[in-house]
Image (cartoon, rainbow, N blue to C red; front, side, top):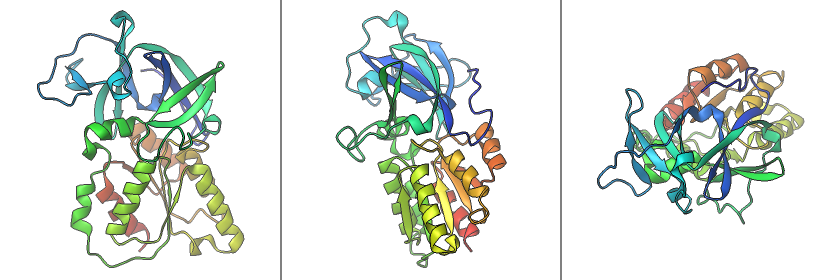
Length: 299
């Protein structure tokens, strides 16, 4: 899929694909999308998950079709002639989402995306990561990682990798996490605690993390308060690339190691992270590799 998204790194911008399921309009970060294809009946999979509509093979790869209407408890399509497959690649996984219409692409700022409160998104249960108003219409940005995780939990974080890292010596070095998903921030924190890292502070987005770092600067040497920053890329208010850029351009903060831990880490995103000065970049399933990376950076 051709896109000009983020030709410059750290601009705090993204492109949102707007699409419809049922009578509702939703959004997806274009960085997750490989291509958009016309809907055709997939091949059913016996005894598969109820949200898996089937499989298809557009080229040389077999891809599972996730029925987004079923996931969101919405009515099925009334006119499949307008239906589309959004083929994605994140968390080292290829998947396609069946939607009822693709509307268009909008370039927006993360600062304009509002995080849903708990009346909309109960922590750990909701599938909305943000809401943005475009052309007088509210568009809900979905948490596709959680949707896939609910179908196949090991695609989100390979928590089984932590079993081999337990019973290690307790380590009190302070770690700051920027992660907007309540489910993932809880899982990452739990995994780090099991691996011995007990002094973990969580921020809900890049802006919250940046505000904390500014507070640490005001108190004196920020390295006394944080030895490593772990950040997602996709977050309302401020994304992880912007956070990394601000840290590495600040003389008082630039020595703090930054690890980008995101479902979006691919070759293109890796190059952008390197340009911004990230010390390491890992794809989100690799929680065991994250612990080993922290070990190396905070020795």
